[in-house]
Amino acid sequence: MGMTIAEKILARKSGQARVGPGDLVTVEVDTVILFDNNFMPSQWRDILKLKDRNRVIVVLDHRVPAATQASAAAHRTARQFVAKFGIPRFHDVGYRQGISHQLVADHGYALPGSVLLCSDSHTCSAGVFNCIARGVGGPDVVYAAIKGETWFRVGETVRYELEGRLSPAVTTKDAFLQIAGRYGDHATMNVEYGGPGVASLGINARKTLTTMSAELSAEFATFEPDELMLGWVRERNPAPFEPVHRDPDARYAAVRKVDLAQLEPLVAFPDTVIENSRPVADAAGTPIDQAFVGSCANGTLDDLELVTKVLEGRQVSPKVRFIVTPGSQNIYRAAARSGLITRLVEAGAVVTPATCGACGGGHMGVLGPDETCITATTRNFKGRMGDPSARIFMGSPATVAASAIRGVITDPREFLS
Image 1 (tube, rainbow, N blue to C red):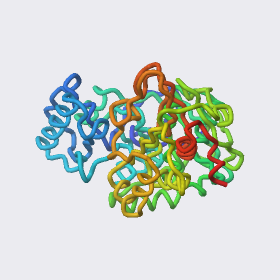
Image 2 (image 1 turned 180 degrees about the vertical axis):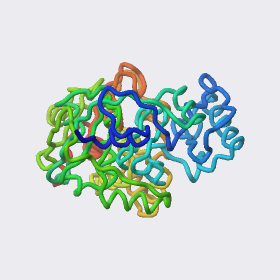
Image 3 (image 1 turned 135 degrees about the vertical axis):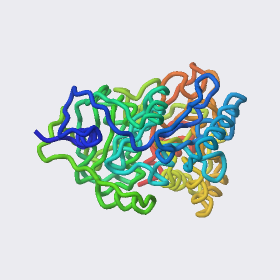
């Protein structure tokens, strides 16, 4: 019996001919990312050695610029750690700033066929590049940095066959919301994306699917390799790699089809995305206080362009705070050069530096008591973005932008045909 993409990578990295669901494997780790939460005073324990400084990346992203004294102390500790070991790949506040998962895409840090670890739960985002990537606990990521290895239990894999093409007002965020709403959580399982519809999707659109797979509780989320993806990595990273294809007779727990052409704009209602997605019409007319576009799931240049297209010639409602956060300063600079930032600001949006920010309720857009927000980010559970009494709806960047204009949750097809 053949293997899925995740199984083949786990077999290769553990030195075995084949692995299957239920197996425990110890694997070589190619890339370890430490971010500012790892260096918080309450968590940090000094590291005395590293397996290979060239396999470590340090990113300041969750609260940048520093939002509290504790986050400022964490940033200082991170800088001292980088200096101590001479770590070459360091993304400090400033020119190289960005959300770790977006920086992985910007710089080609996730090589096809490799293993990447970070202790942020959305690390599976990197699986868009045909690798296996996972968020693990703080002690586990430190162990991997020191020893160069980790262990996993091999899970079953669910494959999603994408077909057709998206219509102008629909995005892969809507595709995810359909999967989460229809099929629920995928705990202990891997998710594999493929099919003829992938060819119509850019890297940013695909990355939304792998990033959001964390909300399915998936172990790994991977894409089949194709020339678009391989070219993206080669343009950004000269290191050699070997892409991994599934075996023709790979065994899956399920194979499910997603017809991109049949999708409509969806909204996840407050407190969970699992089995909680409905057509945008079911939420239409709900007044909002804040609209937010950003995060590792929807802070790309494509997302900013889509938002700007919806806003073109229109103004954000005076009743709404519309916050837009690029995923990295690379994206911010590109948006500034193209005029997108000016157009967003003139329409009434607030554009922040690249950071996790309001997505995790850290800063730059924390919600107050009894407020309602619609967000194109990663999570909407109670208290995620601020006060526990706040309600958080989740939709695509197009849906969020349309809602920001009207002041109530709005179908983006009103503005995009």
